[in-house]
Structure formats: C-alpha cells, structure tokens
Image 1 (cartoon, rainbow, N blue to C red):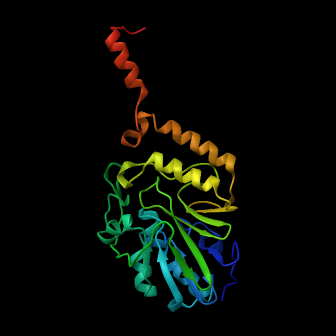
Image 2 (cartoon, rainbow, N blue to C red):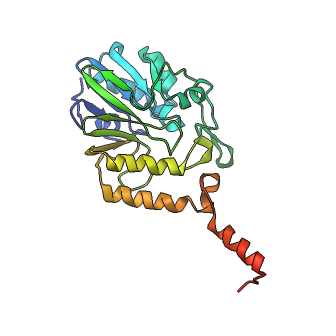
Image 3 (tube, helix red, strand yellow):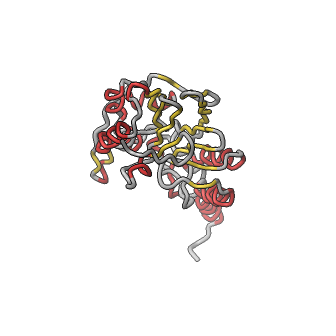
Length: 260
C-alpha cells in the first residue's frame, strides 16, 4: 500500500499524490471509509488514477459519488470509465447534464476542427443534480455547493470548512478559466463569482488546474479588473457586452470626420 499524502485533512489531490502532473486536479475527499472524487480528468489517465486509489487502500465500493465541476473534456472525459469501474453515481449541475448525456464534443471542447483537436467524449448520465445551497455528504463531512458560473454556465465550486474547491474560477498566477461562448462563458457572471469568492472567509483555494494556494484578495482584484476590460473588447466576441470603438466611429461618421 502507498502512504497517503493529504494536502489538508480529508483531502488528497491525485497529481500531488503521484508526484507528477497527470492532467486537471482530481480531488479525493474522504472521511472514514467513504470517499468521493471532484473531477476525474482525461481518459488516458483514468486507469493510473484508479490504481492509485486502490493502492491508497480506499475501498472502491465506498465511492460516494463522482462530481463534475463542469462539462469541459479535460475534467470529465473519463467519467463513464470511472462510473463503470466504481459502480458510482455522477453528480453535477443541471446545465451540464444534457451535455454529458449526449457526449457533446463541441460544448465540451473535445472537437475543435480548426485546431485539429479530435477527442473521444463518451456519454455519461448525471444521476444527481446539485445547485446553489445544496450539500453533498461524505462520511461526516459536508460539502457546500456554490454555483459559480462564468467560465462555463455549469461551473460549480464546493466549500469544505475554510477550503474552497474553486474549479476554473482562478489560478495561483491570476489566470482564469478559458472564456469562450461555445461552452457558456459569461464575463459578467464570472466577475460576480470572483467577487463572491473574494468576499468569502475561505482561506484556501483548491483550483481545478495548478497548485493550491491561499486566497489572495489582491490577486482576485487584479483578475476582476482584467475581466472588466474584457467586457468592452472585441477580442471576446459575443462574450463582450459592447465595443466602445464602434460608438466612437458612429460619432466620427456622423460628423464627417476623415482619418487623422
């Protein structure tokens, strides 16, 4: 058996446990013999993670559920594999349920023709729908469900004491999850989600990519300020709310101004 390397009491992160990066962060939350996973990652790392779980002496039959923070392929491609191997339920937001059930390659980013990205996206049913204010129990622990849309419409975060499993809301370098209309990004909602995280009294953010870090309000403020500029930039297409340059051009056209 392997020695368990929890990053906090009751929490193991599988990349950290393995000592190498296997993909997105996969969190195993446990109390006694009962445990659950928050995200499962790509299909090609599924068997390695399952074997790690076996070697850490977690009873496979005691997996409470498999949580999808949202429906991007790098987080959920292996859900069907894990569900079959563990005979466990899948939990997620209602806005990701249909995407997962039909194995939607476009909304999950499994298929991006322009970049020659063609990945499998095995369909999987979501058994338990959760939303803002719900709780998920594992042993005597309670995970508080936060709906934190912005990166995607279905993005969930989960509070456990002073820890927040914060999904793709923000990373230690101040970057945020990809903004793209195809998977339901909403910059205004993103800002509100970050403001909520900033205002909370959680101490640690456990993101879906990269290292865990202490909540840093100055870092979050910078991300919010940057997102506010995105709202007014053509770079972000239909995710922006306006493009001030076009208002300037309307005035110049009306005034008959020529190029200066």
